[in-house]
Length: 302
Image 1 (cartoon, rainbow, N blue to C red):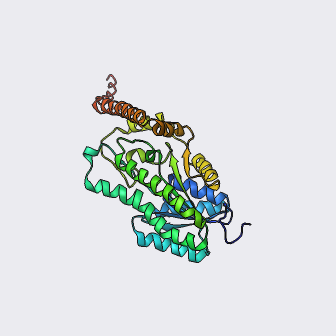
Image 2: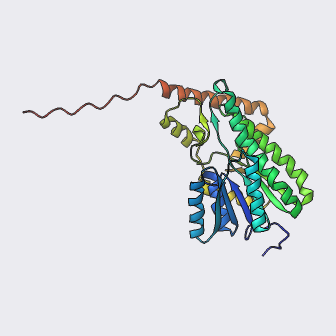
Image 3: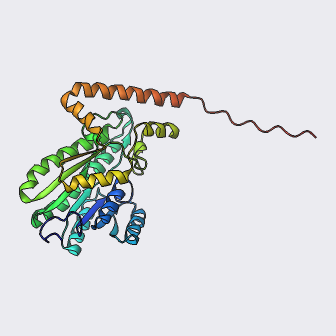
């Protein structure tokens, strides 16, 4: 067993996962529990989080569920403080909750900007602001923020989402350097395309600004080869255990990252090309005439 005054990886650790009811958050919570951590699943969808926590306990793990709106700092701070007081420690906080605003910026309203900033960026800030002082007092802890490949490369049609994820990457890498002398770790997860519910249409609490037929949405999504979130979580926790700074999964998305780092102009050209292809596909789908209704069966002869 690890000493009481050091980070536990992951047996007997205490971990909070925001957005823990579904998708990447759920997968991370389940994977942490399998490794022996006590997991607090925090989500607006508390009933769903409770179901996940119950299944973890049935499988022999330790998990609880709490309702949390990450845009509410007082609620976030209360959850973190209560967890620390009840368990006597906080090893990990996974600031994972996020939404998407999907569509061209010309269709945005100010409330769309505010919503994506509140959840994706301020939600992370609230988690950091609540947990960081505790980790400093302990002299250990690991803050893990979920960004995206959208935080490492241009993301037209996801501009608000990409802006917040770039900010999360910058926050995480900068805080990592600042926190390291105090024994506190900071990592940022940059998933590629993961099979999470509804991200292509903004998710349950996000927004799709342009009407795209569901069949076309699914086709565009599947073309990108989405990874199962459970596979993602397994790989992500291995990287977290190694204290990786920037975790890019699946591995082939590193190619896009390197292209954008080595030749930003080429990265911009590729983003423009992919956007044109996407828009052409959507336009064809929208303009395609609806299928003809089935013809009624001929009546039988009298």
